[in-house]
Image (cartoon, rainbow, N blue to C red; front, side, top):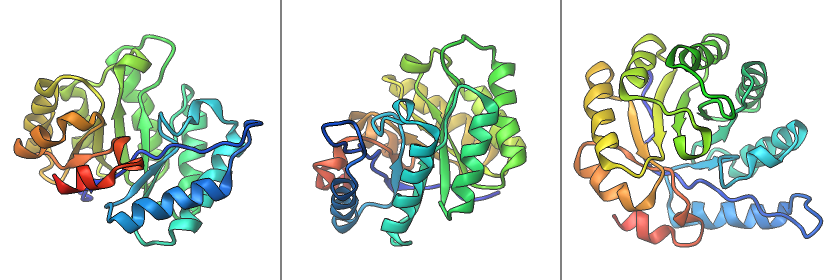
Length: 224
């Protein structure tokens, strides 16, 4: 099984001009800032990267920009989530083609889905694109939680599903993930999305965080 991602991986904000267009130089400066601080990777086009408010072409262009700007200095993970499976596959395939090191995919949103539906969504992407995939659990926004049992099932069946970003305000949920999933794959990464769970996650055997604070204060998370 593939090894997951570890450490402090900022969930990058996307900077815009006043007219709503992407401010490329500001985004370049922000990426340089966190890399120089010593982060272990970057996640672009996640929730605070405003992926849901960008067009398909804007998302692809930003992903290309991020990979080129980082230039292999740290891993680049691209958010390729979509409420539709076909679009998620398209974005994930594009991320692989441009040289991204992995993708992060939040569970489908808007409609309430069964665990079998959610499994089918992730399974379809994992089968069609051989790239490291990090699941993204953010039930407060998606309405579709990823249970520890479902995550363990996906981790067991798909070697390219290598980790999870767990944005849940319950350290108990994080603990269950660590216990369930690492029995299946000890190298599976359990990363938290909320900054204040980082220390507890590490103490319980987790692997780090994909959080927002490192956009402006990376030394805090890196110090922990």
